[in-house]
Image (cartoon, rainbow, N blue to C red; front, side, top):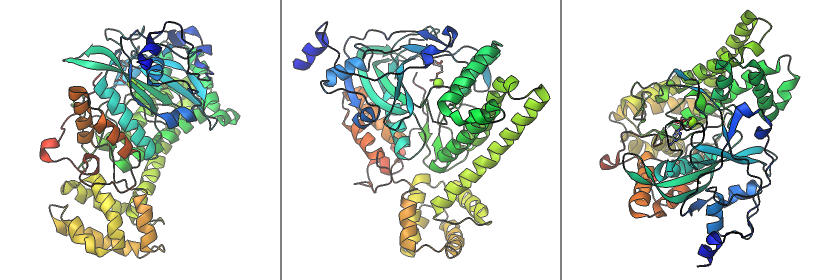
Amino acid sequence: MAEMLKTSDPTPPQPIHIPFETTYSGLPKRFYAHCPPAPFPRPEMVRFNAPLADALRIERAEADNAALAAAFSGQRPPEGAAWLAMAYAGHQFGHLVPALGDGRAVLMGEVIDRSGQRRDIQLKGAGRTPFSRHADGRAPLGPVLREYVVSEAMYALGVPTSRALAAVTTGEPVLRETAQPGAVLTRVASSHLRVGTFEYFAVRDDQAAVQQLADYAITRHDPDARDADNPYLELLRRVSRRQAELIADWMALGFIHGVMNTDNTTLSGETIDYGPCAFMDHYHPGTVYSFVDQMGRYAYGNQPGIGQWNLARFAEALLRLLGNDSNEAIAAAREILEAYTEHHEAAWLERMRAKLGLATAMEEDRALVDHLLAILARNRVDFTGFFRRLADAAETTTVDSDIGALFQDPDDWQRWSGRWRERLDLESADSGTRAAAMRWTNPAVIPRTHAIEQAIRAAEDEGDFAPFHALVEAVSHPFEAPESTEAPWARPPRPEERVPNTFCGT
Ligand code: AMP
Ligand code: MG
């Protein structure tokens, strides 16, 4: 009752304080549109990320769940909220779309977190904006829960990512193929600057804006790049490196983003926009989950190459800042894009070595990794499950027949493991230390697609959020042995649980 009174009282003091220091609103008006959130009938908190709120210095001593739900659905926002939807363009599935922009997201504001890092706080699904085009600016509950779980899992796995601060149901149905419960996700990111933000101004030949945006990006993400001979070239180099590393992280975890459009490619090097993403179950480089990706453009194995393609679009948008004449600029950009591939491959191999328990680097390691991936693909072996078991195999050969049973042809495993053990003999660490290190790099728990699906079904169909909360808790400790190996997040799907396709759900 007290909770209800609190939301219906017309003039209560706002119990939540966020120390906003928003800088994006200082950019020219054509960079964004002001846009307050839509009214919603009955906001209710699904989950609030209190440790993250503390890290962001959000004060909420007096706030109950109703007040938090009202704030993080935009109904009773903390003082100083900026409410702006950012303009951006983007290449979607290879095709330029000159005007996209935040059609269902609004920036509440920026804060400086406890570690001194600037962060955007953004509401996703809070209503229409001038960039919504024909769409409704709303988000159904399912995709909000998926983004919450997967982004928090990525964070716990050590992958640069946007994070989830809150998920709130709105009390308003959202019409898709059927009516679904509406929800708002509060996401937090180092920034929402994308390759597509640059493309927006480049396609309009608004060179002043491109430069202003690049200066803003340098101030925000790479302040020391200002000391370089050409700070814009240095920005391209830094962004390329971050993408090279990020995609190496994805590959090492079997993560498929699903929509690697340039509007989803950040300057910060964080993963954003968790739509039809998935962690692969059995290994195959051609794996695609997204229903809309019929051509497999964003298949697991294509991600490194697509990363480079997206960076080439970034270089094009920046081109006139990259050199004194276009030949010089193109040559400089090309060099950086080539270095991306080298950097990515080195970063990937480093991660694969760690997955195999190799602390030193040797010439033959690449061949060992390639051999493994070939037999994992041929035998349709569960990617995450295999590497987790490999830590056991680093300690004892008694698990070998169990691991062999994961393969259709156990001889493949016998041959490869013989080679792997010969290589381990060249390492100095003892087997216990090695296995422990492997368990810190090869997760036991990931947000498996079937586990997410089960959590969403329970929430949508029965209003039961317990499986969602259990999943978030489990993926927040991905390297710890799970309480039950039967839990859906700790094992591959059973045949009847398999989810063949994922959907954007926008
Ligand atoms: P995404 O697939 O989430 O990266 O979104 C691509 C573009 O579509 C962005 O400009 C979004 O803002 C826009 N968009 C996606 N869903 C909606 C929606 N429900 N309402 C308005 N705009 C949307
Ligand atoms: Mg997007």
